[in-house]
Amino acid sequence: MPICPVCEQPVDANDAYCRYCGAALTQADEGQSAAFRELIEEYRTRTADNPDDDDAHYGLGLAYLHGGQLGPAAQALHRVIELRPDFPDAYAKLSVVYARLGQTARARQLIDEALALAPTNQQYQEISDLLSKLR
Image (cartoon, rainbow, N blue to C red; front, side, top):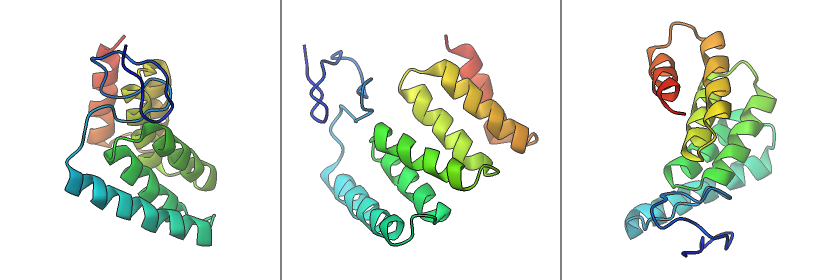
């Protein structure tokens, strides 16, 4: 059985992400990986310099999410919600993280919170519709 390179937990060979830490299990393009590492480092510096900068935490969460690092993405996006509980995009992106981790009930709860804040947002509705099809 394969092992996650980040948390060293056993993973299914068909999984794209580790169910324990959210790490991407497929190899990304090296140029893309380097770009995400640079972006993550930039946002980590910004959040260290100003821990209450919700925009920096959001950027960090997105960089982690798009870089396939779901655990750290969830942490950063939770911090955004702590700092700015009225920011529906943070709930929506966090719902995507939890969906990728296989936690669909939590993902549904988060997208419902995003829709409560922005009920006419079509993208949130589409995410909600997709999540309703998952078990």
